[in-house]
Length: 224
Image (cartoon, rainbow, N blue to C red; front, side, top):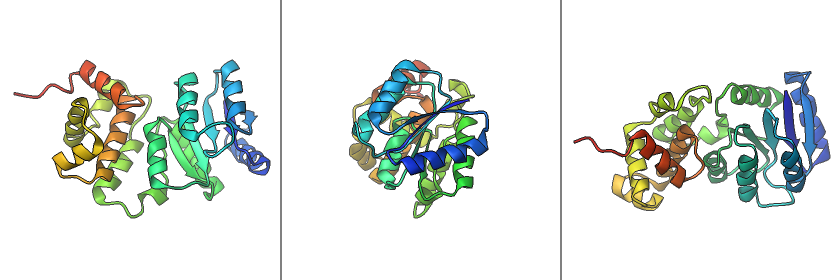
């Protein structure tokens, strides 16, 4: 197993390597200390089984950095391990294709459990993100954990709820989250969670990709 780990704090980077060594003593670790080093590494090496990276590092804005990492390593799961803990940021990383978001305050056991889940094809949602959510939001976040890379697309699509199909159709009409929320009588935050689930299930990184995948699967056809 080959794992790329990245953090701009040397002490944390070494500690993370020690923790992950307990998960797999035979694992090979490649370390980066900023986004520039990540980009240089993945330009030459594509055979990583996993990427664990801090979010706020020198070299690039995290939004563009995550997009670039996914372009270079489209089949490699990426876990964010960060001291930054904002619900909207966490959600955005999931929308961009991250397979998990682990707070740096997590115990070693939680980190290893999250890594195991992601390598099994799941999505790790931190418990802190689930606190204070409505039941619908909670269900949607838990829904993401049931998406497995081992499933074919037809199986994944069955995970989508009728409400998410509605959201998908409105996305195809070019409507914004705010417009969708108004039309469906939902909060904008709930719509964002639906969009997150749609992107993850369809294995795409943006709304355009979601519409293209939905058209291919015939999801946008309304029943007469």
